Image 1: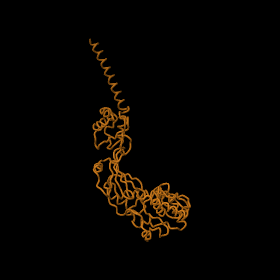
Image 2: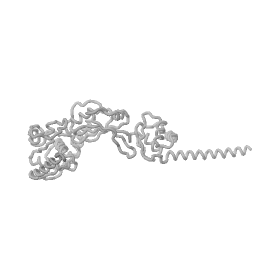
Image 3: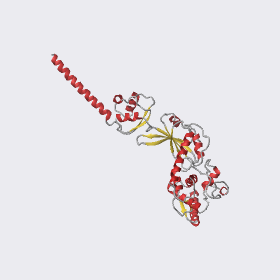
Image 4: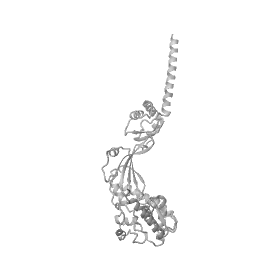
Length: 386
C-alpha cells in the first residue's frame, strides 16, 4: 500500500514539475517574445510611479499581455526600482524585456509633448506639439503669439508637465532686439537681460532649453555659437575679398540674409555686392536703409518712400560708400559662408523676378529692362481681378 502511495506521489510530483517547467517556459516566452502591440504607443511614467501602476497601465494600453509577468521579470532582472520618469515611445511588437529597458534607461523622453518657441523676423509664436505614435510624427496641438494673446488652456496645462520638452528656434535674419523682446515673453525662462547683444552676434538655430533656464545664459550660448561659426568660416575664406575683418564679413552676410531667402541665391547675391565694392560702387540696398529707419526694432511693414531713400543715416547705402557700420540682422551660416566664399560673377545688379527669386544683370541697361519686367509683374499682381 505504502509503495503505491509513494508511487502515486512521485508521479504527481513529476507532473507538478513538468507543469511548473511549462509555466516557466510560457512565462519566459511571454516576457522575451514579441509583444501584442500592432502599432507604437506613447507610455508615460509618472514621477514616483510604482511598478504595479506602470504594469497595469502597460496592460491597459495593450503593450503587454500580462502585468504580473512584467512585474516578475522586472523583479528577477533587478530593475523593479529603476523606473525613470518621462514619456517613452514603445514600438510595435516590443517585448516586455525591451519595454522594461526603455522605461529604466532614462535620458530624454522619446515621445509626449514639446514646445517650440519660434522667434521670427516679424513675430514670435509658441507651438505646442504632440507625437502621434502611429506614424511617429508630431502634430500641432495649439499655436499662439505670446505678445498678442493669452496662453490657451492646453498650453497652460502642458506647461505643468515635468517631462515637457522645450526648444527655442531663431529664424535667419531676425534682429537682436527682436530676440531679446521675445525672450522676455518666454515665461518658462528666468532672469533679466541687461542689454541687447550686438547686431549679428546671435546664431540663428534651434536651442534645446530647460524650464527655468537663464535668459542671459541662453543669449551667451547663441553668441558663442555665432562666434564659433564665423571663426570657422573666416579661416577658409576666399582670397581677394574687399573686407579685412570677420566683423566686416558679418555685415556683408547680414545684407545677403535680408536680400534673399533662397539658399541657392546667396552666393550669387554676395558676388553682386562684392563686385560693387571692388568697383567702388555704392551698395544701394534697401534693407540697410530700412534698418537705419527702424534700428531693427520691428519691421517697416511697407515700401520705402523716396524721401526715406534720400534721408541721411549711417545705414543708407544709397548715400554712403562701402559697408554700413554694423550688421543689420543676425545672419545664418549659409549667408556667412556666401559672404566669405561667393560665386565668381560679373553681375552688378539684381531685382525680383516675381517667383520669389531674383534675376541678375551685368549692365545698367540689362538691369533697367529687368526692373521694367518686375514693375509689370507688380502691377499685374496688384490689379483687382474681375
